[in-house]
Length: 281
Ligand code: PAZ
Image (tube, rainbow, N blue to C red; front, side):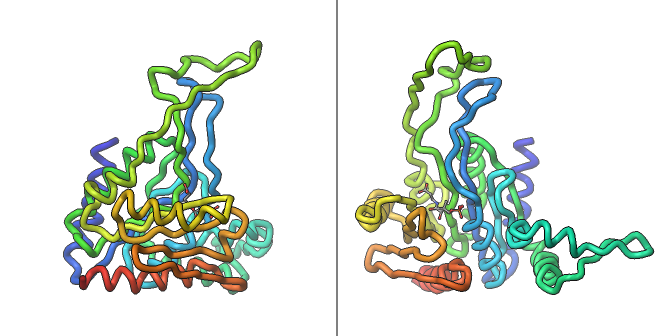
């Protein structure tokens, strides 16, 4: 299982290394879950629909990147996201022909399917569920990206739990409801330092910072940059995350706003330029 996983990433990266100037982005997306029992019935969830990650993948692919998409099982998927929001319409527009083949009578859906088909071979999709699985897979993908040097971008949009219950403290069976429940959670070791300084030390690393209090957003982004020494932090507030983000680097803070179009179009076009600069620096 582990070997198959590593082989698939290494093959994808090896193919990319051979293509002159080919860039590869690792996009993480969706929320982790933390089991509260070994035979788990209950979980601690981090909120994230995966929309940011899925739409960002589409933008990276459009700009010629190959993409490794590490996403929470069941969360948004590139090209499907826009269909998922219109599932009823999608089903109503399906036509089964006399030959038994299904087609779709809607220009927008057809376009999305065509886009997916066009980029399918440039996309490697890998799933995670739990925090532990996410961290294990994140490390393996980052290590596999090393041969690409500066041509690799690591874009960490997943919402990762800051707390967990260590394996040896997990009850084996379902926690009974006969008493009230007091949970002791431990702090998840900060992984961003490992990503930026070791696993993907030569890549262009973009992390995300989600807050609900706008007064602390910029300072938290700056703190992350100074703690981990990577290239960019994208800051966003829960309520406005699809209309405003800030791109924070050691020398600048850029506001990105969008109302009618997906904000990921503007965000990725800015990051694209920054990655280009990073590669020539
Ligand atoms: O997945 P989504 O589209 O619902 O939301 C995106 C997001 C808020 C999870 C992402 O932009 C983000 O900030 N990720 C990092 C979250 C964190 O600070 O852990």
